[in-house]
Image 1 (cartoon, rainbow, N blue to C red):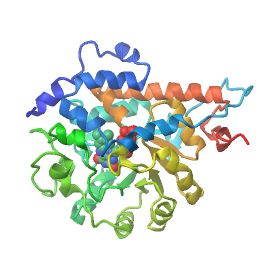
Image 2 (image 1 turned 60 degrees about the horizontal axis):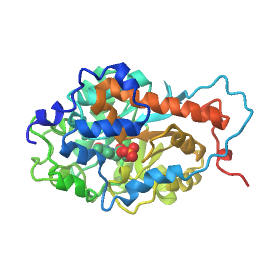
Image 3 (image 1 turned 90 degrees about the vertical axis):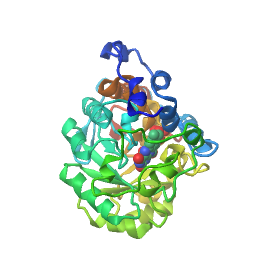
Image 4 (image 1 turned 180 degrees about the horizontal axis):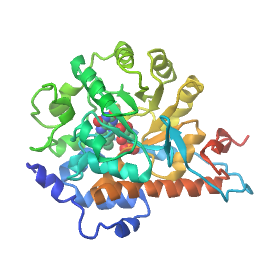
Length: 377
Ligand SMILES: Cc1cc2nc3c(=O)[nH]c(=O)nc-3n(C[C@H](O)[C@H](O)[C@H](O)COP(=O)(O)O)c2cc1C
């Protein structure tokens, strides 16, 4: 470990990483298996791990699989579409790339490649405030709709600066992450000696001179200054007041918190437990989603992320009332396997699976995926 090069070298696209080769991946799990051989041990531990005993991490995935889909038969599904509109932009499917930090750990082209892959796939990308590439460079790299994720730290000026810069770069909305008063205890990350390699940084938080020097091991030591345990609903309200663009609250699992987020000015909520990386013991997002959907009652969109690995999981989320889903780790696997083309292949796999699941469930379009698929009384 040590140099940035060490982390990137093994994940550079190899001569065999042509689009044809990427097409041989038929599941996201296959991509993950190859990505795990390309990444350094440290990068892999950082990406794959969850908090504590990884109970929530595991349940995120199994909870989707447990939901039966009561498919309809003899529906004409000869003309199908997974298309939808998100943030006023036409998208090829109701899926976004979730915000994940430090894409240069996965590929030398980092977030620019992710944005290009998302543009090719016709999906929006959410830029992490812990991105390893500047917002402006990502926006210049690709025409996909971009959202900006924001952590509010102790320094409000940093948050204000980030929101203003992202607006100027043309993003279409914000996701304010609300589930991180402190970082979850991630043992794999600690055991791997997680640090930010020399030559890499959370560049968007350094612009105004913000931030302590990165030192020590583990995200709490290295990036502790990027979050604050004193953040409350007042800060969400403050952030919503800084922009006319929609701000979504990311990391909600309770109905009452969804209501408070709307009261604070959020124009959307994201049911998320940070991919099982924060409170180990938090409910699987598939279990938390129905209560939040009921509380929100159609007033704002509800997104969900955590453990979505199959097109049928997307269909399940839509049937439970989500407007869209976000995927985190699979995008990093795609990026590791083939840069922009790998990211695009990751979404292509999900889209093909969603399209097939819709056909088999008797749903020609996204609007026809409704709650009646889940209940048979
Ligand atoms: C490596 C990694 C880094 C992440 N970084 C961030 C981040 O910077 N901001 C944030 O709000 N969420 C972050 N997340 C959480 C994701 O946005 C998302 O909630 C989660 O990955 C969804 O679960 P999935 O990976 O099972 O799809 C991160 C997740 C991973 C795996």
